[in-house]
Image (tube, rainbow, N blue to C red; front, side, top):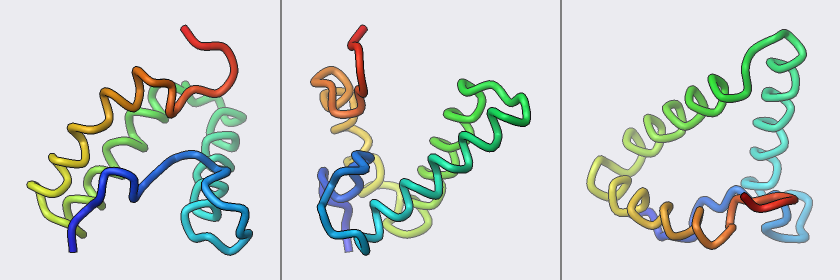
Length: 89
């Protein structure tokens, strides 16, 4: 199996189905971020650790090449606002 560019959207509103695994997973990650911030951890450190853990899991699941191809699509998605909530910089 390979990673399709749109397989792993971070948008919590990906679908309206409450049982969508990606939506549920996003809720867990968001809760973990909130809890860690309440414990005083810096959001930048959390984001870097989460990205490392996510890419490690993707490499373990799909392999290095498929993950690299997926990662190549991220720059354009960031520039287009796919991960932006609220005010854009």
